[in-house]
Length: 291
Image (tube, rainbow, N blue to C red):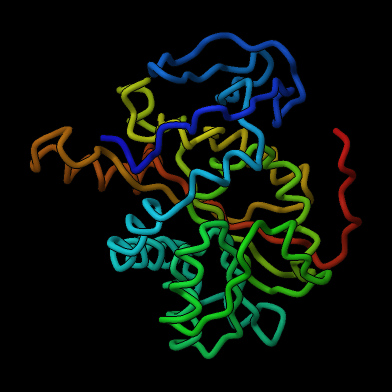
């Protein structure tokens, strides 16, 4: 039921922070997962770990073991990413993006999506990845450009990209709000972002609680669709479309029950994974960092 996750390294430093969605400072226990746990904001209901490990220590988790996991599963992950993009009809609106299309994939792992987009559409592509072995694999084996480090460390110019994709990344970040402000800065006006992350409003989170496959140590923030849309809006983005999938995880139900649950998750929006398509408006002031 769990996705890949590593035990936090010994000696990781942690700090108590306000809620990244509403700024509240009152939290109540939510899920006890043994060596770690999640709390819930008393103001908006956002679920997170708090105190949070600091960013530099979190990055140390993404090592050779993580690379092997990504490399062994990169074809499957690419298929999932493509199907997610198909759910929001990206081939229909991609020609309307600021030209020439420049795709940035943040948390690109081994660069599979970059290679696919460059080969199929002829787009200029760029990746960002904190796992050095995964990034080197993409650079050397796939021949795609990947900056090793965080988006903030990459230092891209203002408005450089017309499409920014980050799948199963934002929940791993200590400070998603600052991250989204940087995404806004490097996205061209009229450009779009594709965000994929677990959804705490989905059926599986409600059914399984602390045993939910996304309640893992590497997930520092777990968003509801409402909370993520609020964070996007306050960062300057306009949400255009939503998609959901993942009715019941493999192994949790027999196939005759899982198939209709998965169909219903997409049809009625109760999946445990969500995709949000959002746009940076063509004429808008950069949002203020303060709430």
